[in-house]
Image (cartoon, rainbow, N blue to C red; front, side, top):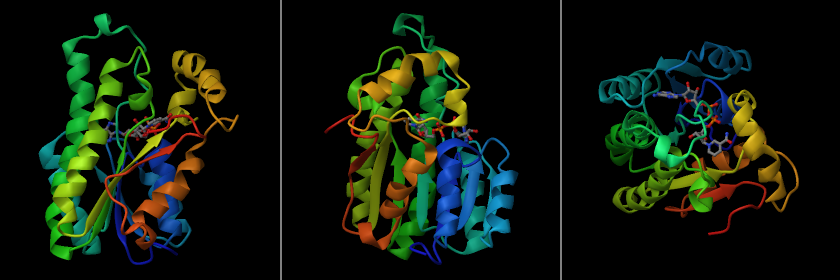
Length: 251
Ligand SMILES: NC(=O)c1ccc[n+]([C@@H]2O[C@H](COP(=O)([O-])OP(=O)(O)OC[C@H]3O[C@@H](n4cnc5c(N)ncnc54)[C@H](O)[C@@H]3O)[C@@H](O)[C@H]2O)c1
């Protein structure tokens, strides 16, 4: 129960890595607000049936009003926000293509959700965390930003921005004892990735071959780092990027 009594917001918690972390935070004693554009009722039911507390807030993280309403709802229901797991993104649904074939509309959509959306969630929880003089923000970057993985320039660039954003926010929010770190996952076998045949064919075996640990990554592999960075054990760690990828990128 390392997060007992904490209130967490997990964006993109309806599925994939966010779902695994929402369930893990609840098991560690945190209340969980699942903010997702997709229905997360099943995850809430799973948490409640295990004796935990969770709510689903339908949220489009790229929409300022929607994020503001979600954060207000979290405070109304649970009275605080201690942890933001800033995870929702457009990722598994993307088509791999050379950068010359990307349209401005595709770029804007990915940046609106992955970059501006993460910014808006941090911005909206900031007044609450500053007033509390405590809080942990965990942004989700990607190993692709270190590797320069080709054929998804918009996505990889959005994740590079998350790394920079993490370092800036660590300085700006550190004055109120709020930690800001990021996790950079390697290629993980989520439902979304398993459903993208091109992505799986391109990334699956290549990812394993490039790792120190020669196996696939699963959503559960993220849990240890996600709990640690949200816990008191990490209270003097900020501005860091934790690669969880079986030993693939070094920085
Ligand atoms: N799975 C991987 O291999 C991998 C690797 C590196 C980084 N990541 C990152 O980890 C995070 C989670 O990845 P995943 O594989 O679980 O993704 P996923 O596609 O399985 O889940 C993403 C979730 O975000 C939600 N979402 C999308 N747009 C939204 C919006 N505008 N507002 C609110 N919610 C929205 C989706 O509904 C979904 O529930 C993402 O930031 C992704 O970029 C994943």
